[in-house]
Image (cartoon, rainbow, N blue to C red; front, side, top):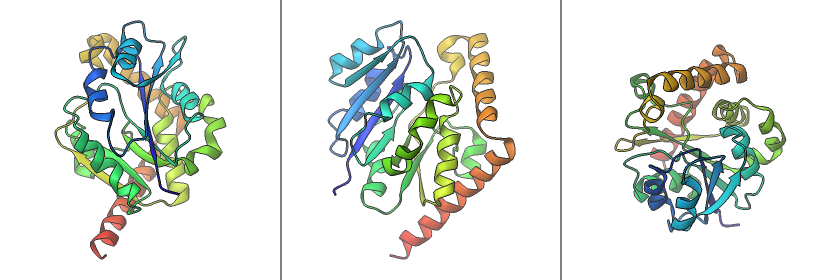
Length: 234
């Protein structure tokens, strides 16, 4: 079976930013389908996505990123899925090609982005373990879809890391030096942004312990290094 990729873009009130992301994803030769998961937006996010040509899954009320993606993932019919945040700036179709191609060429099983404005610590480590942009095989996700609705709102990425680690899958880390994700404070205001960051950290800690998070980072680094050495030796 020829691998195919569905692109899922979870979005909540991203009307000012989502069009730029869709310009990179829609009609991309390596993407079979683009689905925007509108998670109870109160602005024009869903209409902008629909007008651009994306398939839109409208959810009401707002459920949080994990629950929204859980519903969308259950509808994916391709062999692979790409998760893509809706607020990225500087994204170009070639960035998506670099993220998808190693998986479709079977050089690796999973690819993760490392955005240009990711924290310095992530760049020093060489991996952003909570990145929202990743390509994964649906075979990894299908057996655990029933667990996703019970996760905290922002617990998805570390839950996926556990799945990747348990399966021992090779990883590709793709540096997106010109791509950025705006801070929550810049989108919502300082106080609301700080509250959102605290809520995200709380959800991560509710999903995995700090020690498990460290083990995830160590595994992702090692899996990416091992994969790079393997490809270099081909």
